[in-house]
Image (tube, rainbow, N blue to C red; front, top):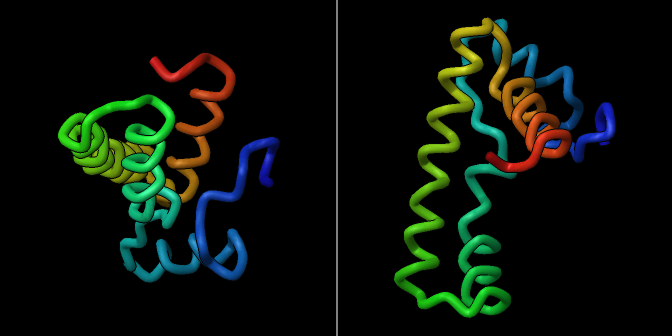
Length: 96
């Protein structure tokens, strides 16, 4: 956990996100790009949604990733930092 927010990546250390950013390498946080399976399973198994409804949720991951990458670019931060900020905001203020 970082600042009370779960670690949002599969890098060896959070500093690696900064190193990649400094070298102009775009890296997407694993928790976002790998979320499809858990999102689909949760929607179907826990929320009793149809597979089609769950697929719509999974497709929403692209919007989340796009928003995180735009935020990172606009703030000059890393995608990891933008994802942490987004997670912190959702934790403190709710999803919407």
